[in-house]
Length: 132
Length: 108
Image: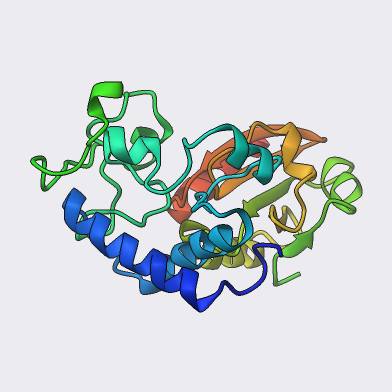
């Protein structure tokens, strides 16, 4: 199977539930454009079907299987989300639909694209901040 | 040309790298939310720059070879090519003005 195909209902439900729970845990919101969320959740579910892991669908991997085998870095929630509360896939964002960037290094592309976006719920999320 | 060209691994060399015109390529994937958000902007740019800049898209899931030489990681990644070389790279879903600015810089 390739990620061009429709994911299974089982994986879709699994990822929807995961995303809902992680939004609560991290104090983030969904994007105002539901199509953005639906696309990403479908991509995660398709990767679960194909690789057994929720590999981020908003990156280019020269070899997806090799990526899955070598690292957990881009399994949702990815390292950037757990450390910096930044989701470039726009799955976990502020109520306005912007990714949180205030914890990112200044030279990170997220800061260059969006400027400084403050975290509305700093008491939640960033469970891997100690790994920065 | 009023719709973005669908570039592929097979056409990339001739349509992009060997093009006489500057080329804007949107590297995207169907399951990428921000890619979908930037899609309408790419269509608008196609119409606006018809005849002066070749504008198109390349689906990285269906065409995994072409992106490999351009240090692309996050998508959407919009790259501007001139005379076969990358002259600008815009990562993420950016405002239309940023793409227009990058295209304007091509003439400099």
